[in-house]
Length: 111
Length: 113
Image (cartoon, rainbow over the protein chains, first blue to last red):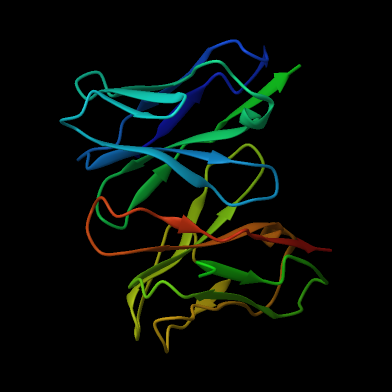
């Protein structure tokens, strides 16, 4: 069964610090990998999307990396802000309509 | 341009009751999806549609039904609500193409008691 596993489950960081979230997947065949940010009580919002040929993709203070050989991805948040407090979800696409969602990493940024 | 609108935002149902979760989009996307999100779990696909008149089962379709009579609307029907259907439901849309971005609604929080 295709799976997407994220770590850590949750983390707390101080405002201004950096953090890195991990995503390991077994989805095959692989089409693309997306990172979403989900604020409490809201739907997920796309941060980045990468195909197998892309190693890194940035969106402001968010930088995603992908190693398609080891089936690992990471999301790095630079200079965290209070508004970064959210759940970050790794989503791997097998086909156009078939997505596998990770359970998410809950990030709490404290002043 | 509201994107994806879901109603209601919250609902409490008694076991055995029925209800329809509404999803409407104004982006003219062909692909529409219904997901449920349970605590500590990734989103699970219930049903999806690739265009008006076409629907198909996802990973967890039991206990649900959908219809897609128009491009804009994709309602999700629960006929006999069960406690296991307590969850947060998200509707999502997507244009064609493998890399098209998904747009999610704000969700419906359903509790079955």
